[in-house]
Image (cartoon, rainbow, N blue to C red):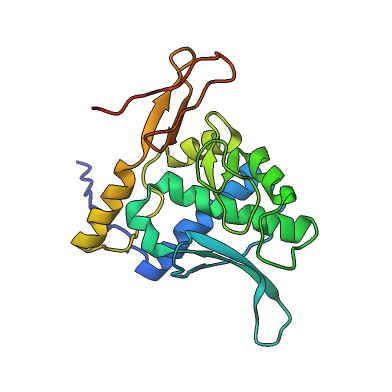
Length: 225
């Protein structure tokens, strides 16, 4: 009689928090580099840096090995924002900074912190629309810039694929009650608007008035009164 003993294999140990946090970001970087930049970008040193009023920043040639044989660029992300952002928003910030890396590596590097038309064109190409306000019709160049996601654009499609299997960012910074209340207040100030014709959607301030170019319809809010 053949007796087969089945034993449950122990689960592999989970990566240490530091390893996991940076593996998450590197995995997203590699995915976006392939899908949005045709693998043209060199690896950057991704760091966590708290910078008031900024979700992240890019700094060219910021790090080097001690013998100075290898020089790498820095992409910094602000972990203080993570708890109040979705994975989509965090991935979009990384893609925003990767456009700065693209300009520094593939075009003429800027000599000062600025978002110019070359950077803006690349953002639009990958499906992130630059905007000082983070909403439709905002100024597309300047020192301090945000963006919004083009519905159905390259980034939108790629990010949905990336997130299809669940959470991408494992660790987020904990926030106290006061900061959570402030974050909720900021989220409540965002209103969803929908075109009655083609159902195109945008987010904006409650008093935003936008007309759809395709249908000519004035977008209406879906917010509850």
